[in-house]
Length: 349
Image (cartoon, rainbow, N blue to C red; front, side):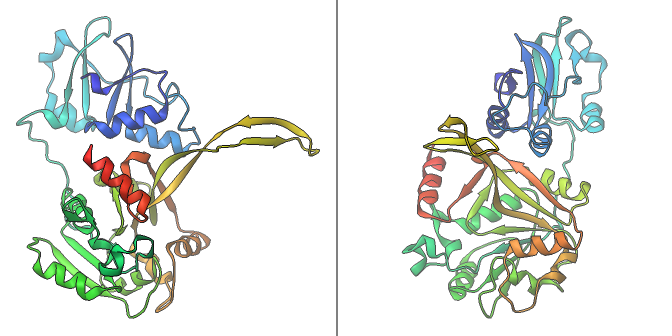
């Protein structure tokens, strides 16, 4: 249980690290072992989207009115019904003074009969046609999606993430070394529906999606072929649907240390102060999206067109674009050699 306990003085970044390590996606906020609240990954996302700094405290972020059960009364509750009706993943068990003595964790209870909704009918598009020039000399020989991570290519690891939530329909956009890509899957024993979408010329990070206008008729995932995102894809999909977004970006929180003193100026141009080696926080585009098919009509046919062009276009048209934050550690990028080596190191730990 200790792995899901957190102090109210902890930072949002600390909470994201703990949530990444746990499968419960819920932390118990405690003050000297006494329950004072709960903090879910959803609470953290809302805090970030509301402008809270990742380095800031969770003190004004967590839920201060959590559901809990007194140890002396646990036999009076239908645990299965509570999990189903309240949509929670953890139930704290406390003494009369609210000291935590135990907790019930939804995904660790056996034979509880809780069926998780799967995303069987949600299509997945993987943009697999790029040249991968930043990964030479690997990509001089192989298409980027076949770059190995340990003993498997990155494309299989990406697909595994979606298979875990029940997705069965996949579209791979191909161009560079497409014959090698198709030959690889011909030799692979897979149990999902796979469709190859072939570009006649390089169309950028979004141009080939135009080829899917007649193929996809419901909200769908789009993933770059050089990333691994460790997130709750079901929750991501619900976030997109419930928020009534037309396109949702998954963004990773990143912190950078500026190795210089930053000079801050007054309005008259004189020096106000110097911030020594300040840290800046950004939300980086991870390369994973959910899109509604209606926006595909704004992609020009047979034209080089990036995802940034699509986002700018649909925003001008009044469509809703959502942002789903994840932690930096939940995003692995192998688009460049340094990131590739870092990914190998992380996956060996």
